Length: 265
Image (tube, rainbow, N blue to C red; front, top):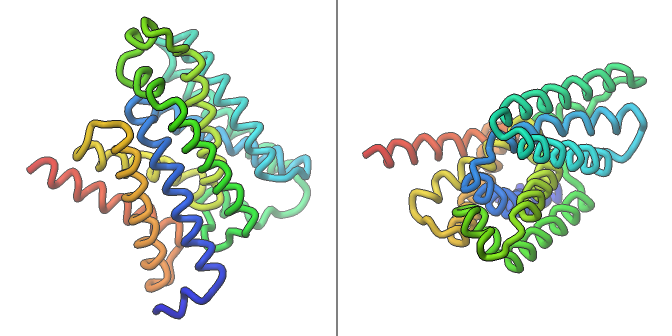
């Protein structure tokens, strides 16, 4: 079994798994503490519109998805703050719009898009060195932002009114967090796919919360758990000849079920 480690595609997959784990551990913890999973899910699925734009206009996929996802994410954030009592409806509309818009553009595109399933369900074994460098860059940015503004993120996550009294720009850090979610989605698309990203964002931090209430510790533990799920999922996919992305999420879901079982006890 160890011979698989000699193949470059599997080495890239392992590195990608670790890089994705860092992004999802950091962003997932912030999303959970701020109760933004609904918004994160909406942003994730709306990103499909960016894929449609890339295919229709023959643009680089990552650049197109980044711009489209960031624009829709900030729009959702603005409208949700403007109409807080109807934020769930706004998220649902943007979610549906992104998916429908992407499908229409893909239908109107010339030729058959053979790599569409890779963006929907992930293709972690097909990642290139360029994908890994992009993930590393975004991870580095996330770590730098969290270190530089850790106190601000803690303040807006646990007590927004206290943060305002302390002079923290709550709106700025709210929009910054939304932008970070958007870029987290972008770097995870090729690894686990649009449909499966939300599981990797939610499961590790749910388990981590049972052991710590400190945001920084939660992020670290979430990263470790996410990496564990990814590595076990890749091994499972190799042994059973299954989809790598789906195997990762299935391992995470088993971990979620076990966490619920022991938490209940």
